[in-house]
Length: 103
Image 1: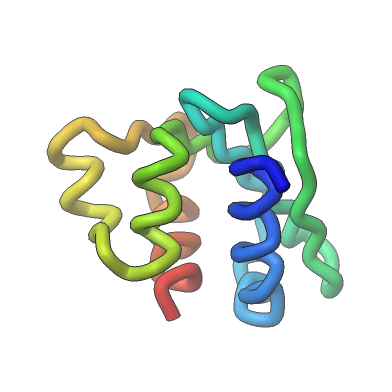
Image 2: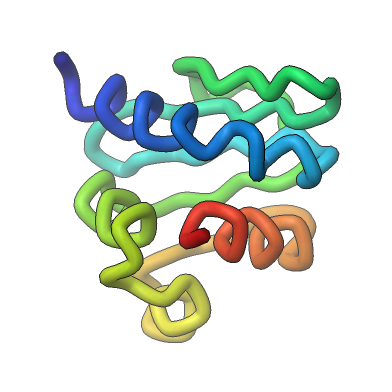
């Protein structure tokens, strides 16, 4: 299983929580492709995407840091402050997503 697929599966495990997000978020992994979280419908879709896939918010970080965020070993605000995580679009949506992923 590819690193991107592992991250997708980890996010899917939290899809019930993500249903409250209500937005489309693309996560661009610097070293492993892109992931789209589409939480605009009750059934959240988490799929591989490409860099042209439209989303309201785009989060860019390394796959290693994404795995750390998912496991609770990295704080999203700290990563943003240190430049390890970049946000394009709504910062509020990105913060909501990070809080849902760490639950």
